[in-house]
Image 1: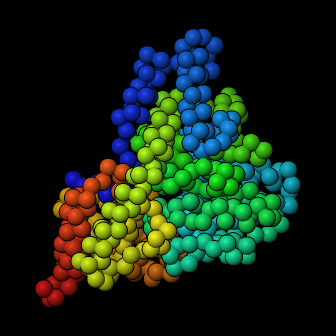
Image 2: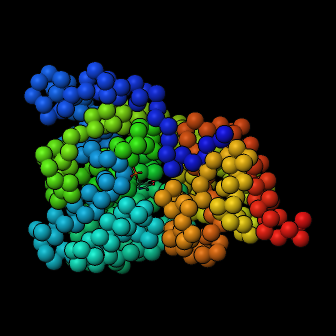
Image 3: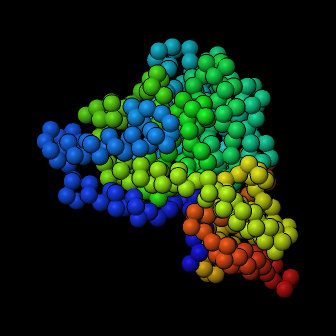
Length: 388
Ligand code: PLP
């Protein structure tokens, strides 16, 4: 099998597994316990926090461990907006882009439904990019928070986060970015990006599912969403997933150190894969920005097919990929991300996303491109048998 669905999830890296193992077995303490076993766990958690902070170039106290990217996004969007609104009730709007992951979009909708916020959605262009001008148009004095993702999970388009966050800051509005797909492929220095909050997910970078991080700048208050024993400095109660945090910090540090080399290598492979696919299926349409895209994502629409059918054919041919985001897969609705790019719903139904792990090889992508040609041909023949 050739696994081209790394944007959905990745296997746990051996180093992460080895680093977490002690905290699942012998050193199983609760970090809140006042005995040696508990202290060992607390020390491990503090070490994981410092390691994450080092990669993000922030203070350890600004790192909150969560149960994943979804929770980190929820905590950022709801937590920052609600805390700001309770300090200043006139702050009752949030800005998101039209291509956010549901974890951000649904958090904003929750604020609208339950807390009376208005949600301003910044449009994207045909490549999925948010422009600074488009953002400026929707910013208001009442905007409590802007949340725009770093890199899109379906089309791989990378947003100009530093410029967008600077535009929000001109009006004193804090800026959150969902960096779940960017981590491991793009620099995640929060000072260079100029962001006030940033979400990460462990399972996209070689740590287990159910581990995540929210960076939130020290001076920003955060209304907690999970109440209880006050762990994570009161920002996220619940006994910490020590092993998950250790694994995430290990995987993040390794992927960060390998990032420049891996990104360059995989971007080159992605380019030849795109060229092969466009050569083999001339009417295929690459979705997302041509160059401002993740090294690891190549996404297409194959007119005259259905994305789900191409996916099934590809699996028969030994290639695992996705018809969009893992969350939307299996749903009949066209991807809101593709529709936001201006793609017709019928064409959006023909989308297939190929996303690569850092271990991907040229040979695997050669084989996958040939499989794409076969799969699309088979699906088209089934759709119109008289055509051949
Ligand atoms: N944000 C983006 C951009 C994602 O791609 C994902 C997962 O697909 C998430 C958030 C959610 O992360 P998790 O699966 O850790 O909850």
